[in-house]
Image (cartoon, rainbow over all chains, first blue to last red; front, side):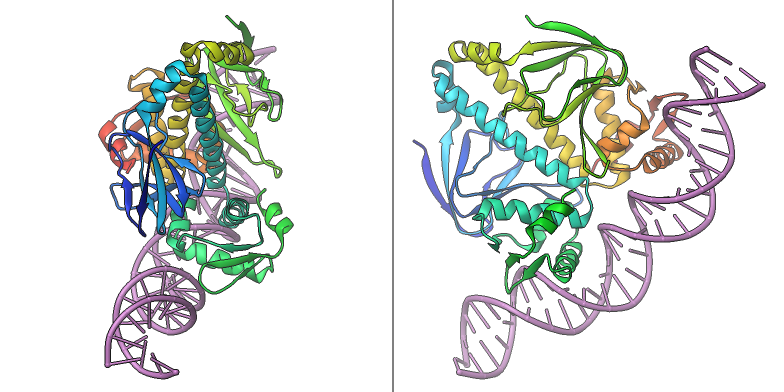
Length: 193
Length: 193
DNA sequence: CGACGCCTTGATAAATGTCAAACGTCGTGG
DNA sequence: CCACGACGTTTGACATTTATCAAGGCGTCG
């Protein structure tokens, strides 16, 4: 059911406006979904990790593009297959409903982050990633600072400075590369507001 | 199918965390869906006008509360009715899929506004409202400045000042009360970025 | 008229963005 | 193994945007 495709770092999986013939599932690696505005600014709508579905559309075009963040393996499932299946099979229909529901909740969470301060956005982001990556306190972030900035609606400099400030307050520790340790979960949760 | 209920200005239709036994449809009037944070700040997730569905949940609790903005009439449809219907009837299942899809797209648009500047947010907001209220250039906004501010993630003062500035640039005209005329659609669209 | 709610305006502070440069890390090739 | 280069990240000085606090105006309804 569906074909598995490998992508290397920063490859486009599909582009904005392309026909949305498939829905996708991350098998391994990480994917970002994004939109580029006319003036070059970029917004990242979501990060998708192993097990996550993405590219769900109601219309017949993709409303965002999707790119691999790292070397990744992605499963593509033909939408028509699901749609015609759901015409008879309630199982498939319910799967679609559940997937849209998950995406809805994810988006609601994202929207909530965007109305808060830089500190709150980073705290929420780190907690979300800790939750999704492993549940562990040691995070190995797959994405760059620029990706984080575009996801949170901040500049890369603000992301960097805010992380340093969180480290100064002993809430986290920034290790080499993209590794971060969450030292004080409750402090971070408190910042979430 | 479902009961129609009347609400007067600023009445709660359902609260955050309450069991989501019904999905709702605005018959007339206007509704806002919102969340109040622990520190008192409020986020408005969406405005719903005549014909719009709201209160769609995947879990069994409402993730936001909903309140009437004006005197409104709201239809409540039992969720179980739809769910059990969709177990047999593909019609109902497809309705649910379509509704989630619409809500998804609305949320994506909202998320996009939130990463932009105050001018861009107001321009997008006004165009969205023009589109949804009548398609006409003369808007009769149902919501207060505070509602707009909480929807756009700005303060009421910034909303007010930004509107004045848009008027100064001849893009809009602010009339008495909550009436606004869009004078230069293309200028507004350009600001949308 | 007066009171209330809502909106605007002004002065100032705080948060975030911008531009520029330095620094680290990591992979590559000598 | 070390030196180098490319890329991503941090830091600094400064500009801009937005928030905050406080006051004033304006419409509406008793």
